[in-house]
Length: 253
Picture 1 (cartoon, rainbow, N blue to C red):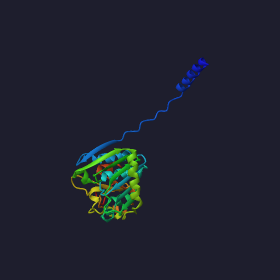
Picture 2 (cartoon, rainbow, N blue to C red):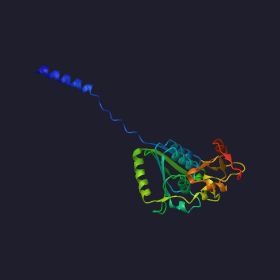
Picture 3 (cartoon, helix red, strand yellow):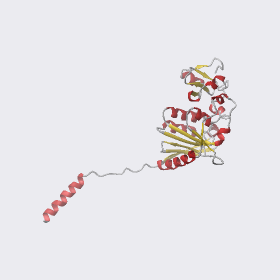
Picture 4 (cartoon, rainbow, N blue to C red):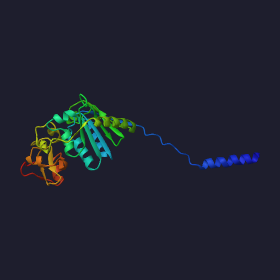
């Protein structure tokens, strides 16, 4: 019996050794990047995350007039990323705002008027990455102001921010924009940042329709005829020409 007992122990040990052990992969350690402005790479950091997004981008913003960031969001939307924005209700009182810009291009946009100020500066990417800090998505925040920006890779934290975004989206009003004609207003508050008036020394922004081979200055009357969903913004004249567009004969961009 004693010998049989030892045999049983040896057999049991062999069986245990033959069973593969299940290993629990360690949870990814959250990582944080920090940027400061002026001219500290905040806008570039935001754009990198937008360009890297695979499935969703949720935006909460108080002031939003950055042309590069707006254009990156539009490009993400066009490649199939779900982009949605909740903005402060003050956007609807501006002559031309980021709310108009996004809404005209088919990005679901809501205005939050349930608070004195909807003062968040947040983007959530793919439910995994959060961008936040004092940095407004504006040209002045990048070039003139003292601001900070955090890029936080933490799905747990992203889930909390997503829940908060949904809470505010739930009590916000859908915004459809005020018509493409406002795009032609060179004196508006958003246009000088998103589509600046050209200067003799350095043209800064041009508009075109995806259905046309012609591009225009921001103030050209032909711009008012372009449907929002077809509007394309080019940062420079060379960029428009490289895309196969020709200068408008009327406004001569």
